[in-house]
Image (cartoon, rainbow, N blue to C red; front, side, top):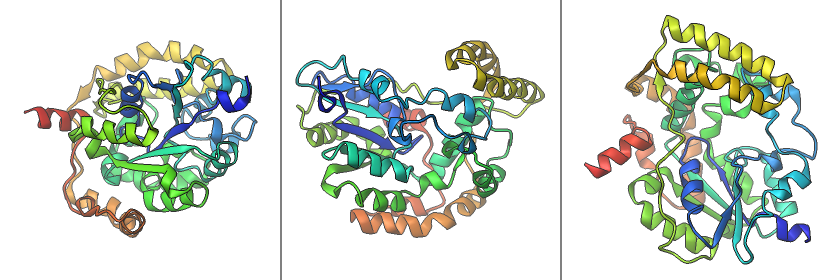
Length: 325
């Protein structure tokens, strides 16, 4: 079988913490689609070699990098189980942010269809922060302080998942993607559409992918992390987790995943209601992003005025509960 029949025909390219896991799971319910059994293989973020260590210097980064699929044959095997005639796809939500991935996707897959999900960039950053705190990796207990440290961390080589503001600059990312992938091969949807009108949204995605609408259905989200308060217990456990993740960079990745499970479960025992950022915090995070939001509006012809205000809209389960009330 040639490579052409063992490669994806579409990717969910981003953004992280914008509903890509929920979309992946929903599309996997469609019998005419085949989603890779491994989510986030990150293959097109590599150049056929292991990811460089100088870009993996944040807590847990080096361990996580060991899970990237950089060997081509290993990546191709992800699609060997695809039934004849199905449309093959995978999800790596960092492809949108990684400009080198844009070029690699276009070169290897000229007809690739790219699905992009965008979310209020402040809400996305908060969810990103909560995720890393819930995993015991973010050492800074204050969200705004962590955002202020972003440029320093980037200079120090921390991986993209720590780029709280940067990952939310969708306008620049979409502009750069269009330089490699024609706009007609890119489908952009909003997180709020996926949560507020999932059936209609999945039908639109199905039409874009050329499969029968009305078949894919939503499944319960699995990637909503609990908010864990900053307590003495949390600080002690998270220090152990960060040390273990550093050591885990030198063993097979599944070993540390297995060892860390009870530690993370103990960490989550202290979960609390997720706070929303104050108006002042939201404004400080948002203001540098306003020119990029305007670029996104220019590129898409859509209004994102609701992102420019002082009100956050909450996370996936909060919105689902509001919609069902």
